[in-house]
Image (cartoon, rainbow, N blue to C red; front, top):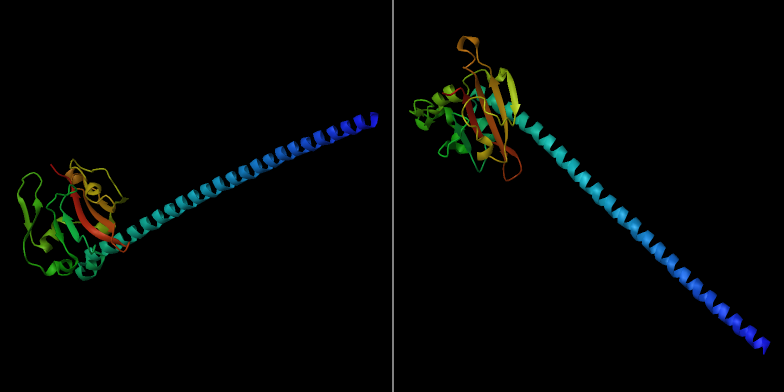
Length: 231
């Protein structure tokens, strides 16, 4: 009888121990599983963060490269304008949008725009165009391309500009500057010449060269915008 009771107690103890060990194993396995999932979650978060950082760095580098390229192209265009080299200048013109000309920094909807092929013969064109109206008098600006060039494009030594601004958004005079509204995806290089004491510094002038990417992703000239003091 005593042996049977002892044997029964031993069996109960064995079963209890086995169940306890199984429970411990379940807890340990669950902890290991949670730890693995936690590590995977951390690794995934780190990978995502690293990817975002790399993307931001690539975008920042692309912006730096684009800015440098636009500045380089602007200087080349400026030199061609100085030399009146319309043939080579036309190679910089935006193939889809053409080249817009504005005598003032407020670009009007009916601003004159020449296609690339027309720009090639810019200085050989003797036709008079209406480029806008004179600020103050409101009279039409009716000039040939060569006359317009002398008055509203290369009307000063811009190769020796006192200031060269990148994406300037502030108006220097009292006229609204809407270049960015007309060309929202553009970059603008502004060549500014200070006024003289003789005229109370009111005879300042600036030339803005506006660039946008074409369908091939290349920065092309879309506008030449003149600026000066207006009444």
